[in-house]
Length: 170
Length: 105
Length: 328
Image: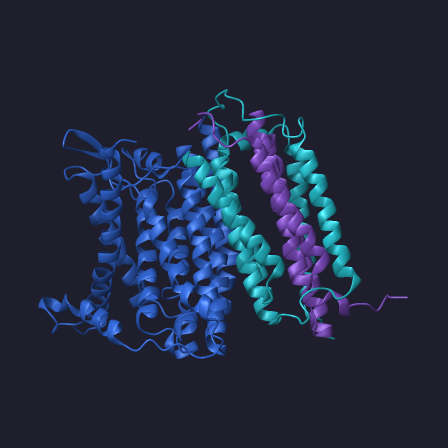
């Protein structure tokens, strides 16, 4: 029952902050509301026994990526734009498309086979579920090749970001 | 910890679906490039939630591995995307995607 | 989850909270006296015996000051920013083990609020969240100097977080666990500072940089940036930032003691007494560093963190991993 209350709390905060991100005027407030979404999702991850991923969410996503966002917003001093939403027919089409996506997703999730039926299996999880040890065992054996490629990707991203944002002095 | 949880899987998937939809609407409807980026991050997080919930369902940690990679790719994408935005902003003083239309026919 | 467990948890939370919040005035007094004597003068000596009540007098003064809120600030962020700093600093104290356990009223009470299996990650997460307190404080002030100070300060904090985490990794390798309790228990025979002296020095430097203390306090020094990110905060808001700075000092000192200096292990006295002794010694070392070194220029600071400390920490990690593998 405690889990139900916690889930309802985290879900409510996440949805409220997500709506705030999309419909708020000031970009700094949007970024902070997105941090709120990330932190409440970290709480939901802990409810799902994913301790290491929750910690990564806080340290990497909310603690580094969003700080980068905030730096850029603050340094560029981007004001809230007027009007808020794309004018005219594009706005209507945007909401309609959102409605279509929502309908598709709800149809899939709520169909009998969609969420593989009902509650979680009653079998106990392995002891190392969600821990860094469990993730490490998978990451460095089965998924070693994607791991090395992702580290190359991050190197490319670092070099690219430095090159793109550099002021060129001629 | 490890007792049967009270909240069935479908609620987690519903939460992920709602967050994903809000992200889609945000990308399509807002003009500011920064808020569009944030809506993309919202969609990525909804997908992460869905992956973790299914990983709990199956009892294996492959979902967590996938989420790890999604986070790394999201970090790279944010870095490059913001660098591009800074470069555009430096030239044009605007961060609105409606004003960057030089290629329009 | 019976009543006794709830009472025990509540009492422990109150004790740790009280310890942290009452420790702040004591650290401030200690700093002023020790700095004074190191600078060949006596510190506060009039208010109370040996100036012990000086910090309380300062607190009362801050309480009665006028709370000036400039007209163009972002009101919500202005109110929330100091709170974020304090909350993250206090939350980090919840996973620190103060001793092994004590037996009271027939119950074995572990001397920590909780022990999560990812305690070090929790601490790193709390430190990352603490950056927001500074960034939002500077931004919400809507003024040049606070913004510059906040951006410099937060860039410094996130840069040194990397080296700090990498310096803690060899400890985790040697223990095989991220839990601070296991790390403390693994040091009953030999403190980790002995094989990991390099990691200790790196952690020490990063801890001083993380808490924005001299010699890394360019972002909040009066001669440089007025007062940095907390320029526009007065009265109790400033007091909250002040408390959060010293609470952060306590947190990083407690982590250093747990990971490197043997946590609560020691010959005759009970565990928590040794913890307090080591904490006071570490705080004295902190203040000594402040009294000795000149301030670093900002680009020197960032160069040092990225181009020297981080590679050194990585090399240390690699060497530790190789040695542990070879030893079997």
